[in-house]
Structure formats: structure tokens, C-alpha cells
Image (cartoon, rainbow, N blue to C red; front, top):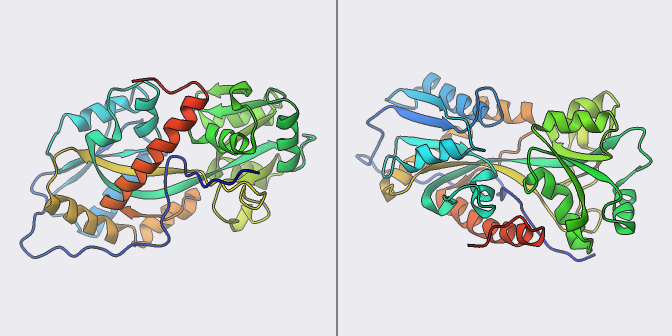
Length: 329
């Protein structure tokens, strides 16, 4: 099998990176902080924003109020536009996921990640491929064999859109093996929960989702997890599930959560946020949230997070072009 290391929608770091020092008298926030969530309250983007707010408030890490603002709509584009309008404002930033890249690449937004200040990658979320326990597919090798026989042999449930990390968790490995992924029968649902419900009911042959979505169904014996997209085998509920790398396909797929601010922040402002976030991700309340959602504490500070997104964007453009989803500009 062709070997290639691909990190989709988030690039991980090995442990926490050093926190930059901030000199006395350097910049610090003078106005209330707005943590913008480009989705409705209660979801996977809202939760880290609320925990940031809680930590900064309860630990007295801010001298100004911290507010969470939900601006849902347009597949995260409404929130993205709001951030973009605040050029030079270091008091406003958003928690973003994959659409930060894919909305531009697929033509859904005129804004791309380079139009913003990338403050950090907060953490990574890995995916897994699942089938009903009654499925004749007993392992990932069975799955690959079926697709090799015919790329359209199986229907594949995707939440929420083709081209996201869920879709790529199967499409990328199959592409590296040499399967024509343009012929895949992808079935998109409005949420990950709906897509996995369809798999549970055998309305769709196979599905993919984040570990936190699949864990309860694995635990109650309703789903068989065939493979995870992490760089190495996980512990806990997924300790018995192999990675793509173990199966000879050197692919790692992670849905990262990033913080982006408006363009035009000064080096002193970015340094202050690097230090603040570096302290925050070491707090026990932050780790508790990550553990509960099976998220991985792979924090990356501003300059490295931007470099990672540069590489990731190029890789993602190539894949989306192959499947006919990338818009030519």
C-alpha cells in the first residue's frame, strides 16, 4: 500500500510546547473578551468556548469580562464574517473547525484561513469507522476488500457534509490504497448523530464519526468499530481497535479545533494570547473536558498552528480536487 502521512483538519503536536514569556508592561486586554461560536449553543464548538470562559473567570486569569457569543449559520460562515469585520481587534476570536478550510476550498465562502490571525490549535479529535454488529464486515481488511472489488459496493454515512473529516477518514485511506474514491456512495446527513442512527438501523452499510459519538454504541454492543484514525492505538473503550497505520496505510486524520482572531494583531498581542492559552490548556478543568469528549490535548501555539494549516490546506485542496469538490479559483 502507498504510504503517506496525511493529517486532515488538524495537525497534532507531541506534548505541550513551551509557553512564551510576556514581559512586564506588555499588552493585555483592555475591553471585554468575545469568544465567538459559529454554531448554536451546546455543540462541539460551543463547549470549549464555555470552558475557556469558565476557567478564565473562576481562576481570575482575566481583568476584563469574558463573554461567549453564538453566531450560527452558513456552515460557520456567519461567525467567520463577524470575526473578519473586526480587523485589528485582539479582544474577539472564534473557535473554528474544518469549515475554516473547506468552506473556501469548496466555494462556500470568500474567506480563507489566511485572512485571519491564527491564535492556536486547542486540541484534536480523532475519527473511527463503524458498522452494525450484524454486518458481514468483521474488520477493516474486509472493508477494504469490498471497496477494492467495487468502489460503489457499500453506502457510506457522512455527517454533516462530504469533504469533512468524517468523509476523509475513509476516503483518504482508500485513495492511498488506489481505490477510485469518486465512485463512493456517500450519504450525507445533517448531523453525526443522524448518520450513525442510519448505520445502526442498517439503512447505510458503514459510517464514520468522532470517537465520542461512537463510544456509547460500541459499549452497548450495537456497533463494531473497524479502525481509528489516530497515530497510535488508543486506550479505554477503543483499546482493541487498530489504526490505519497498523493496517499498512500511513494516514492520520484529526479534526482540530482552532482559535482565530481578526487580521492585524500585533506581535505583542499574539504573544499575550500564546501565554494565556498555554497556561489554560494545563488547567485540570480543561483536561476534564477533553477526557469527557475523548478529545486529545494537542495544543499548538500561534506561529506553528499557522504553519500546520498552510500544509494542511495544500493537502486538503489536492484531495478535494480529486473528488471534484474543490472550486477552481
